[in-house]
Image (cartoon, rainbow over the protein chains, first blue to last red):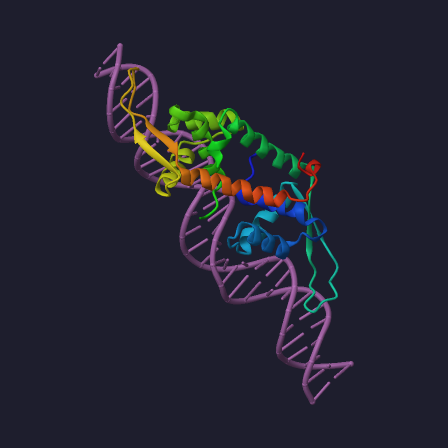
Length: 106
Length: 106
DNA sequence: GCGTATTTCTTCTGTTTACCAGAAATAATC
DNA sequence: GATTATTTCTGGTAAACAGAAGAAATACGC
């Protein structure tokens, strides 16, 4: 199991937090709001495809919405494999903090 | 301040943990031991250069060691800027976990 | 109610940057 | 000169970035 990249990890976290409302546009907006940085469309959709291929998320197309312009949305959910990948990243960071005074991190 | 990439963050943490003994070879070995994954030389030295340019670490050449083959080592230390960058990553992840049941992370 | 404008969401194209693998170079001791 | 520890280099693959284009739905004018 190869380590998650930064963007992959942030996307997984965003999908968890957005719950029922996790699709490309909301994921991207959420990441921009929380990080304060710009994310291009490709920087979200491409990692989402990769996460889907690896089985870290599942993608299901929803029905068209009632709103104007309400095109289908592709909703994402984190799988147990995705959760495990997040946990592995936590384990690594935790191991790298062992014995380092907390002050050193800010 | 642009977000740290995965490798940059892991390297900063490794440098903190290694303390006085943080140079290319030990950083690389440490990361491989803790992650269980392979890191090429370039995957360590290139990010180290980048972190140096950005002022997240300082690099100082040590004296030759007494051992056979004891070439100079380039020692690294994390700067306050580097600590702040680590803290920013923590803030982002923490914000993305707000309201998500801990169980969901593994 | 037909055609067209508008809106939402996703996909695509081209470019830049990061990462990867390992050989080669460097600089020290024996 | 042989050997060893460390760093640098070379070439290739993959990820991230920026934003335009495309697709699929509703709304509006007449």
